[in-house]
Amino acid sequence: MGTLEGVSLMKGSSELVKGKSYTASELMAITTAKEFKDWEVAFVGIGIPLVAGILAKRFHAPNLSIVYESGCIGPEKYRVDFNVGDSSAADEALCLTSEWHVFGDLQAGYYDIGVLGGAQIDRFGNLNTTAIYGEGDYKRPKVRLPGSGGGNDIGSSVGRVVIMMRLEKHRFVPRVDFLTTPGFLDGTPGARERAGLLGGGPVAVVTSKCVFRFHPETREMYLDTIYPGVEVDEIRQSVGWDLLVANELKVAEDPGEAELAALRAADPANLIMGGAAARQKLSGLDEFLELTLKYAGK
Amino acid sequence: MTENNHGNKRMTLREAVSAYIKDGASITFGGFIGRDCVAAVHEIIRQGIKDLTVIDDSKTDIMDLLVGAGCVRRWEGAYLGYGAIGLANNVRRAVEQGIPATLEVEDWSNAGISMRFLAGGLNLPFMATRSMLGTDIIKYNERIKVVDDPYGGSQVALVPAARPEVAVIHVQRADVLGNAQVWGFTGNDENKARAARHTIITCEEIVPTEQIRRQGNMTLIPFYCVDAVVQVPYGCYPQSCYGFYSYDVMFCGDYHEMSKTREGFLKWLDEYVHGCRDHNEYCAKVGWERLQALSHLEKQFNRI
Image (tube, rainbow over all chains, first blue to last red; front, side, top):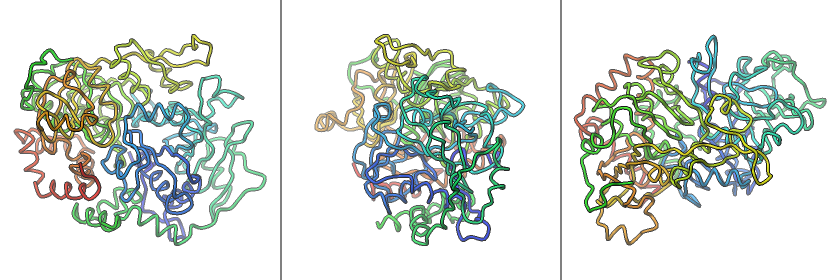
């Protein structure tokens, strides 16, 4: 199950970026955090997107409201969640309600931004979180993934979508095996509107090496920003189509110490950012409880 | 829709499961990967119930257990993973390799399936949604009908009402009549209880009806939807229950490691489900001190 498991759920990994003091997951979280604006309402999932949201709240977007599909609106995050329905998802929430109401509010256009991941993406930002076929098909795939969850709903109706994915050729494919969540569909002008979709679609794909954005007319993904030390060719080789590159390619800055420290404090046991390896490092539940209380100031 | 609205509906978990959940039944569970019906699911497995059709939004632990134990024939739902921990190993084995049996899957989105429960609860044949349009979910799911808005707007997707035979819903507290009060998020529980033919409420606490009356707006599910009321403290463990106990990420991580192989899963199942006569024995096996530590943590954040 190896690499597929990681990013389809946006789990972290403890591996450091070559020559740097931070991991690719940390870099992705910090880059994604910058996509949130103050006073926005954000539909985020568990895993790295949540940590990105927490980080945004601690820096430039203190009034960001996070919404979970279980029915939690605007919790204050002193501890991380491992499921969207953890009791922690409700900590000091502004409103606790039902799942169908939250999806109703999403469809009614109340939510500004959503963050999604996937196992596969194509150049128009369509996502697959349902199945990797391999030699098989939908009914008997090589890897059965979790399915849409709320991903399709967010991709259909939220104001704009930020996608987080590790940059690997088997993920950035000409055609996704199963189109779970709509990006710009076939990329033709007005494809989303014709399908009846109300949301704005994807605006950025944050990866472990770069950030892609979408051309305003052709809706095709292009390379917008690279991280320090990354070569454009390296990115071209990790994408399964002929990649467009911005005329004025940007180079991102290394994350600051304050951001890294805040990120690590948001997930003190490193269970979101560090994945299974971090779990094995903990001595047991007691240590997890201790860290959780300490960093929540309890 | 209960056939017994006359007084006390209190039962043991064994009685309730055996009375209402039959082989081949369609079933839905309350909660949303949190406040999950773990105790009831263990009892379904202990009673060897087979061929269930589960209609649900998102589930992790309890579906992975039911599928691995061979209780489920078909899944109609949106998400089957293992939260931030990983993919659901038993679900994968069932879909990819037919172990222990092939799981028939019908994919929906969470909003799509939510509308199915709303339609069921309102006694309407279908509901409309703007989700799933333009995707392969619709391509492979023939029950989703894309139609033009008859009033002249853009196209929408229609989804059929869900009417499961049984809903099992765990809540913080209920009275013996079945008035069920919920704190924290409510998922689709109000609609699931209304859509289902029979509803089993499991709860942390049974309280007098007078106490229910003092906070009537916390009653998510009124008595007339409910057939059975079962008190099962720590009934969601290792999942969380708002105001009572937090999620045990370490226990779930261990389960996920064990369930990577069929043999490991069966060993886990023998120890924690078949090896326990009831939920009380399961709690004792987990350790009451561990459970109390999670209650302590939860009460630092959320109190009822």
